[in-house]
Length: 449
Image (cartoon, rainbow, N blue to C red; front, side, top):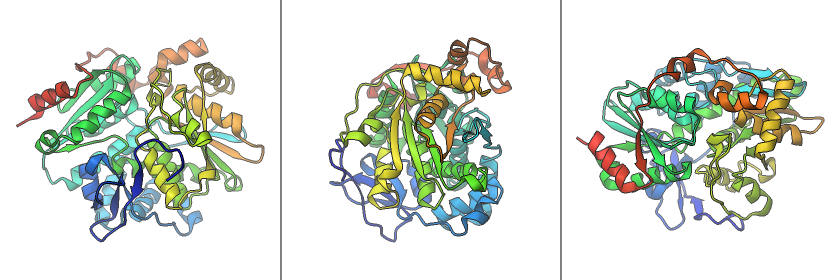
């Protein structure tokens, strides 16, 4: 354990031959192993444990791998992580369907690039993981009923809703903090109806996450509704995200790959976890920057070894308004097992004033961005050395934060077709208090058989 870590103690349990994934659990609870399919279907393990690969193999012949097209390379990366549990044709079909859009690397300056992850159907990086999970669950569930329960601080809700909308025998319940995400983000998942049930919770994102975790500890709901989660705690979403880090590096000129620095806008820390898994597999990234807003639990922890979450504060980069990131134990596991050196990760917190400034600086460089990417750009540009090449992740289309971006830049931005289609639609979301009993009653009434 790292000194001063104040969350519940976590440890990787020993692997046995029951499956290829293992639960990251409290030291006082028993080991829990699972195959990939079992881990995907369960979402969370016992006592809210997180599933994690028992081994992260190194990839051979990286130059040849990086020269491959995105889909073909992603199949290789995922096969390396998952093993042979999914038939080759099944995995190929899943990846081709899920990754049916590009992730271009766009130059911003001579040595800084933006990895644009917002070219999917809901204009956010969550489309990669959400679609991969939906296709995987559809392939392995064999028509059995499933209820997806997930919390969103913005983009997850839309990505999951669109990925699962209309899939037979799968219902989706999405919890989001009432009044704390952008109106257009909300419209993308609260207007679908059908098997998508949106619930506005009177609380912050951490409260929504707590409700999800509590539901998984409730046998009536977990077993009765065949519960699963589509948050980044689900291993399928996490592994899908590993693939676009390889895609990013493949687009960097070979002469600039020796000193790569990647800045990741970080809230629940799934995105950063995926990047560090990619590094553990051999991807040539020199170091990562965990870029947060003023909800800076991790940057403070990296500096002091003192895990001391503060109350969550609302910011313009609302998808990162998280004080107790669920995925952090996975990053600690990577360090604990020796896959990642702690020295390759630093943390930087960016306040609201500097986020505004970064948006304007990017616009002056001819690049229109949004608050989350602006946080990552600010952290990167402030820290990048002369001999390094930087990549910051563009996790959402600027128009998803239209009001904020227009206010910062003093000029209008146009809506893409995906947002125009939902802007005038009526929200179908229902409202609940931050109370588990109310959520349980709602779910059993709506979805119970």
